[in-house]
Length: 106
Image (cartoon, rainbow, N blue to C red):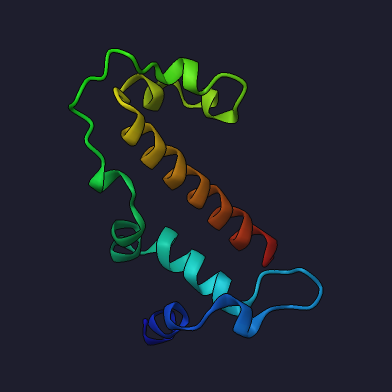
């Protein structure tokens, strides 16, 4: 736990790998966000999103046209405004990056 906390303080470039692999700091940060309740809550974009406000001019399906976000129909169906959509896409992108980071560590 202490090591995970310290990794949040270190910039990722401080421990960068010359061969393009994720640094130890990047791996720790990804693990913190994906594998701990506190880390997931801290990194969660959706907790600040307003899911209740309906913007009739916004269509999440149209906004996601031509993207991989279309693979998540249940989530798209509950997004009613652009700020909520942006928060969700940002959080999803981070989670996918974190999973790739942890997967590349082997």
